[in-house]
Length: 200
Image 1 (cartoon, helix red, strand yellow):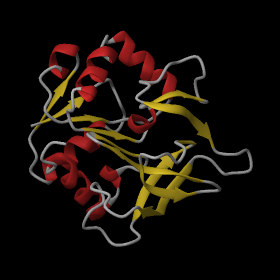
Image 2: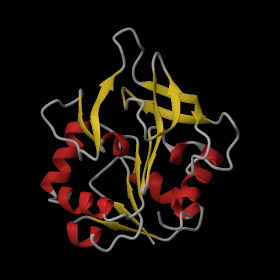
Image 3: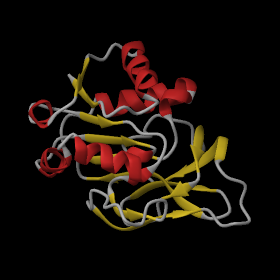
Image 4: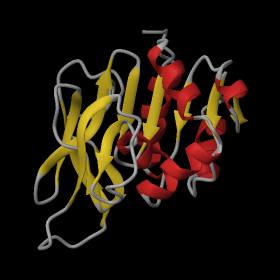
């Protein structure tokens, strides 16, 4: 069973449809008690970093979310759900991220056309689990103005004026900057890879 944290993200329905298409059972939760039962967890996300973090705090689920991730529950953050894993974002400097990874989310340079929207190629690192069984240089669908830096946890990069993290993997924590729910068959394969993880 996949647990989806429902805080009002705009891509929630698309994520639900993707899980249904691959035959994965899921449930929506809205509170810490629901998170406490999660065996696999997805945090979808589109929109503004500050709004997302304020929503998590208003729902009083920040602590429960971090606790489940730190307890080893496989976690997938999508787009803003990946960015939330870091300490902070230039999009909302006064709001704290979840702080599971050090550093900040940055805005693309002033010379870049934002949002970075459309299909772009990612460059996976050898052994990346989330993008296993995909073509060597898959194209996936992006829609974002801010990006995560390349770190030791980066499992795939993308380049749009700067090289940044497209896929993050660290123990039980996974994140994607693109939208697998809008990336056709390759996106379905990525979500299936997460669903089929046998613990971490």
